[in-house]
Length: 253
Image 1 (cartoon, helix red, strand yellow):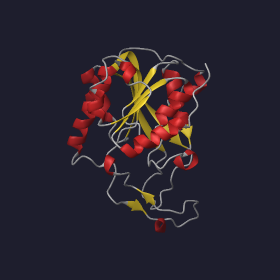
Image 2: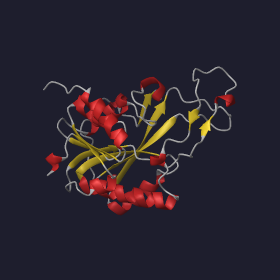
Image 3: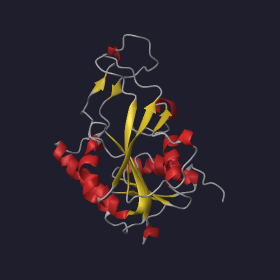
Image 4: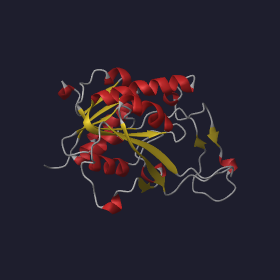
Protein backbone atom coordinates (compact mmCIF):
# COMPACT_ATOMS: atom_id res chain seq x y z
CA UNK A 1 0.00 0.00 0.00
CA UNK A 2 1.23 3.47 -0.87
CA UNK A 3 0.70 4.65 2.73
CA UNK A 4 3.70 2.54 3.74
CA UNK A 5 6.00 4.72 1.63
CA UNK A 6 4.56 8.22 2.05
CA UNK A 7 6.62 10.89 3.85
CA UNK A 8 9.61 8.60 4.19
CA UNK A 9 13.21 8.64 3.03
CA UNK A 10 14.02 5.16 1.75
CA UNK A 11 17.66 4.11 1.62
CA UNK A 12 18.22 1.77 -1.31
CA UNK A 13 18.77 1.32 -5.03
CA UNK A 14 16.34 3.57 -6.91
CA UNK A 15 15.34 1.01 -9.53
CA UNK A 16 14.70 -1.73 -6.97
CA UNK A 17 12.74 0.53 -4.62
CA UNK A 18 10.68 1.95 -7.49
CA UNK A 19 9.63 -1.59 -8.41
CA UNK A 20 7.90 -1.89 -5.03
CA UNK A 21 5.70 1.20 -5.52
CA UNK A 22 2.12 0.74 -6.78
CA UNK A 23 1.12 1.55 -10.35
CA UNK A 24 -0.19 5.08 -11.02
CA UNK A 25 0.28 6.33 -7.46
CA UNK A 26 2.45 9.47 -7.93
CA UNK A 27 1.11 12.95 -8.65
CA UNK A 28 4.50 14.41 -9.63
CA UNK A 29 8.09 13.26 -10.11
CA UNK A 30 10.84 15.79 -9.44
CA UNK A 31 14.40 14.51 -9.33
CA UNK A 32 18.10 15.20 -9.83
CA UNK A 33 19.79 11.91 -10.83
CA UNK A 34 23.53 11.38 -11.31
CA UNK A 35 24.75 13.07 -14.52
CA UNK A 36 27.84 10.89 -15.06
CA UNK A 37 30.03 13.94 -15.53
CA UNK A 38 32.50 13.46 -12.64
CA UNK A 39 36.18 12.94 -13.35
CA UNK A 40 37.84 11.11 -10.48
CA UNK A 41 40.15 13.35 -8.48
CA UNK A 42 39.79 16.24 -10.92
CA UNK A 43 39.47 19.88 -9.86
CA UNK A 44 40.05 23.41 -11.08
CA UNK A 45 42.86 24.93 -9.06
CA UNK A 46 42.84 28.48 -7.80
CA UNK A 47 46.13 29.09 -9.61
CA UNK A 48 44.14 29.40 -12.84
CA UNK A 49 42.34 32.46 -11.46
CA UNK A 50 44.35 35.53 -12.39
CA UNK A 51 41.85 38.08 -11.13
CA UNK A 52 40.12 38.89 -7.88
CA UNK A 53 37.32 36.46 -6.98
CA UNK A 54 35.73 35.74 -3.62
CA UNK A 55 36.20 31.97 -3.76
CA UNK A 56 39.33 30.82 -1.95
CA UNK A 57 39.20 27.06 -2.50
CA UNK A 58 39.65 24.86 -5.57
CA UNK A 59 36.55 23.77 -7.50
CA UNK A 60 35.99 20.01 -7.45
CA UNK A 61 34.93 18.27 -10.66
CA UNK A 62 34.51 14.91 -8.92
CA UNK A 63 31.15 14.84 -7.12
CA UNK A 64 31.62 11.35 -5.74
CA UNK A 65 31.52 7.67 -6.65
CA UNK A 66 27.74 7.88 -7.01
CA UNK A 67 28.34 9.93 -10.19
CA UNK A 68 30.98 7.49 -11.55
CA UNK A 69 29.24 4.11 -11.23
CA UNK A 70 29.20 3.29 -14.96
CA UNK A 71 32.04 2.20 -17.23
CA UNK A 72 30.50 3.61 -20.41
CA UNK A 73 27.75 5.92 -21.63
CA UNK A 74 25.93 2.86 -23.01
CA UNK A 75 25.80 1.31 -19.54
CA UNK A 76 24.69 4.63 -18.05
CA UNK A 77 21.93 5.14 -20.64
CA UNK A 78 20.62 1.61 -20.03
CA UNK A 79 20.41 2.42 -16.31
CA UNK A 80 18.59 5.71 -17.01
CA UNK A 81 16.08 3.81 -19.15
CA UNK A 82 15.33 1.47 -16.24
CA UNK A 83 14.47 4.10 -13.63
CA UNK A 84 12.73 6.32 -16.19
CA UNK A 85 10.42 3.44 -17.16
CA UNK A 86 9.63 2.77 -13.51
CA UNK A 87 8.80 6.44 -13.00
CA UNK A 88 6.38 6.25 -15.92
CA UNK A 89 4.72 3.19 -14.40
CA UNK A 90 4.14 4.73 -10.96
CA UNK A 91 2.94 8.11 -12.26
CA UNK A 92 -0.78 8.81 -12.44
CA UNK A 93 -2.29 9.61 -15.82
CA UNK A 94 -1.80 13.36 -16.23
CA UNK A 95 1.17 13.59 -13.85
CA UNK A 96 4.25 15.58 -14.85
CA UNK A 97 7.94 14.74 -14.45
CA UNK A 98 10.95 17.06 -14.03
CA UNK A 99 14.46 15.65 -14.41
CA UNK A 100 17.61 17.71 -13.84
CA UNK A 101 20.06 16.37 -16.41
CA UNK A 102 23.39 16.96 -18.11
CA UNK A 103 22.77 19.39 -20.97
CA UNK A 104 24.75 17.19 -23.37
CA UNK A 105 22.50 14.20 -22.68
CA UNK A 106 18.99 15.67 -22.48
CA UNK A 107 18.28 14.52 -26.05
CA UNK A 108 18.16 10.98 -24.68
CA UNK A 109 14.67 11.66 -23.33
CA UNK A 110 13.14 13.35 -26.38
CA UNK A 111 14.72 11.13 -29.03
CA UNK A 112 14.56 7.70 -27.40
CA UNK A 113 12.96 7.22 -24.00
CA UNK A 114 9.87 9.45 -23.98
CA UNK A 115 8.47 8.24 -27.35
CA UNK A 116 9.05 4.60 -26.37
CA UNK A 117 7.21 4.90 -23.06
CA UNK A 118 4.46 7.25 -24.20
CA UNK A 119 5.55 10.37 -22.33
CA UNK A 120 4.60 13.69 -23.88
CA UNK A 121 7.70 15.89 -24.09
CA UNK A 122 6.92 19.37 -22.77
CA UNK A 123 10.01 21.56 -22.68
CA UNK A 124 13.51 22.06 -21.37
CA UNK A 125 13.21 24.12 -18.21
CA UNK A 126 16.35 26.14 -17.45
CA UNK A 127 17.82 27.17 -14.13
CA UNK A 128 19.73 30.37 -14.89
CA UNK A 129 22.47 31.00 -12.34
CA UNK A 130 22.85 34.69 -11.60
CA UNK A 131 26.39 34.20 -10.27
CA UNK A 132 28.02 31.55 -12.48
CA UNK A 133 31.49 30.28 -11.69
CA UNK A 134 34.06 32.26 -13.73
CA UNK A 135 35.87 30.50 -16.55
CA UNK A 136 39.35 30.45 -15.04
CA UNK A 137 41.10 29.13 -18.13
CA UNK A 138 39.01 31.30 -20.47
CA UNK A 139 38.50 28.49 -23.00
CA UNK A 140 34.68 28.49 -23.05
CA UNK A 141 31.59 30.44 -22.04
CA UNK A 142 30.87 30.53 -18.31
CA UNK A 143 28.52 27.70 -17.36
CA UNK A 144 25.52 29.65 -16.09
CA UNK A 145 22.64 27.22 -16.65
CA UNK A 146 21.34 23.78 -15.72
CA UNK A 147 18.71 22.00 -17.76
CA UNK A 148 15.59 20.18 -16.58
CA UNK A 149 13.76 17.84 -18.94
CA UNK A 150 9.98 18.16 -18.57
CA UNK A 151 7.38 15.65 -19.66
CA UNK A 152 3.89 14.44 -18.78
CA UNK A 153 2.07 11.12 -18.77
CA UNK A 154 -0.73 12.05 -21.10
CA UNK A 155 -1.88 15.35 -22.55
CA UNK A 156 -2.59 17.17 -19.27
CA UNK A 157 -2.50 20.79 -18.19
CA UNK A 158 -0.49 22.29 -15.34
CA UNK A 159 -2.51 22.13 -12.15
CA UNK A 160 -1.86 25.67 -10.92
CA UNK A 161 -0.89 28.00 -13.74
CA UNK A 162 0.34 31.24 -12.15
CA UNK A 163 0.40 34.76 -13.52
CA UNK A 164 2.02 34.80 -16.98
CA UNK A 165 5.08 36.67 -15.71
CA UNK A 166 6.00 33.69 -13.52
CA UNK A 167 5.47 31.01 -16.17
CA UNK A 168 8.45 31.33 -18.49
CA UNK A 169 10.49 28.12 -18.73
CA UNK A 170 13.42 29.49 -16.76
CA UNK A 171 14.18 30.37 -13.14
CA UNK A 172 16.69 32.95 -11.95
CA UNK A 173 18.65 31.96 -8.87
CA UNK A 174 22.22 32.16 -7.57
CA UNK A 175 24.33 29.04 -7.46
CA UNK A 176 24.89 27.02 -4.30
CA UNK A 177 27.31 29.55 -2.79
CA UNK A 178 24.25 31.68 -1.92
CA UNK A 179 21.80 29.09 -0.56
CA UNK A 180 23.68 25.91 0.33
CA UNK A 181 22.50 24.25 3.57
CA UNK A 182 24.36 20.91 3.40
CA UNK A 183 27.62 19.29 2.32
CA UNK A 184 25.96 17.58 -0.66
CA UNK A 185 27.96 18.68 -3.74
CA UNK A 186 24.96 19.18 -6.05
CA UNK A 187 22.28 20.59 -3.73
CA UNK A 188 19.64 22.45 -5.74
CA UNK A 189 17.87 25.71 -4.74
CA UNK A 190 14.78 25.07 -2.63
CA UNK A 191 12.93 28.06 -4.10
CA UNK A 192 13.22 26.59 -7.59
CA UNK A 193 11.85 23.22 -6.46
CA UNK A 194 9.03 24.91 -4.55
CA UNK A 195 8.03 26.84 -7.67
CA UNK A 196 7.82 23.63 -9.72
CA UNK A 197 5.94 21.81 -6.97
CA UNK A 198 3.39 24.62 -6.56
CA UNK A 199 2.63 24.75 -10.28
CA UNK A 200 2.41 20.98 -10.73
CA UNK A 201 0.65 19.72 -7.60
CA UNK A 202 -2.00 20.40 -4.98
CA UNK A 203 -1.86 20.01 -1.21
CA UNK A 204 -1.69 16.39 -0.05
CA UNK A 205 -0.48 15.21 -3.47
CA UNK A 206 2.41 12.72 -3.47
CA UNK A 207 5.69 13.86 -4.99
CA UNK A 208 8.38 11.30 -5.79
CA UNK A 209 12.12 11.95 -5.87
CA UNK A 210 14.07 8.73 -6.62
CA UNK A 211 17.42 10.51 -6.09
CA UNK A 212 16.66 12.61 -3.03
CA UNK A 213 20.27 13.46 -2.12
CA UNK A 214 20.30 16.07 0.62
CA UNK A 215 16.49 16.04 0.83
CA UNK A 216 15.64 19.39 -0.75
CA UNK A 217 12.60 18.03 -2.61
CA UNK A 218 11.20 16.52 0.58
CA UNK A 219 11.83 19.72 2.56
CA UNK A 220 10.09 21.78 -0.13
CA UNK A 221 7.14 19.38 -0.11
CA UNK A 222 6.78 19.45 3.67
CA UNK A 223 6.83 23.26 3.74
CA UNK A 224 4.15 23.37 1.03
CA UNK A 225 1.85 20.78 2.61
CA UNK A 226 2.60 18.07 0.03
CA UNK A 227 3.49 14.46 0.69
CA UNK A 228 6.81 13.05 -0.50
CA UNK A 229 8.65 9.83 -1.15
CA UNK A 230 12.44 10.08 -1.28
CA UNK A 231 14.92 7.42 -2.31
CA UNK A 232 18.70 7.45 -2.17
CA UNK A 233 21.46 4.85 -2.32
CA UNK A 234 23.73 6.65 0.16
CA UNK A 235 23.06 6.12 3.89
CA UNK A 236 24.93 9.38 4.57
CA UNK A 237 22.68 11.39 2.27
CA UNK A 238 19.56 9.70 3.65
CA UNK A 239 20.65 10.71 7.16
CA UNK A 240 21.32 14.23 5.88
CA UNK A 241 17.81 14.43 4.41
CA UNK A 242 16.21 13.07 7.59
CA UNK A 243 18.01 15.66 9.69
CA UNK A 244 16.80 18.50 7.48
CA UNK A 245 13.22 17.20 7.63
CA UNK A 246 13.33 17.08 11.43
CA UNK A 247 14.09 20.79 11.36
CA UNK A 248 11.38 21.59 8.80
CA UNK A 249 8.02 22.87 9.98
CA UNK A 250 4.87 21.65 8.28
CA UNK A 251 2.36 24.47 7.63
CA UNK A 252 -0.74 24.83 9.77
CA UNK A 253 -3.91 23.56 8.09
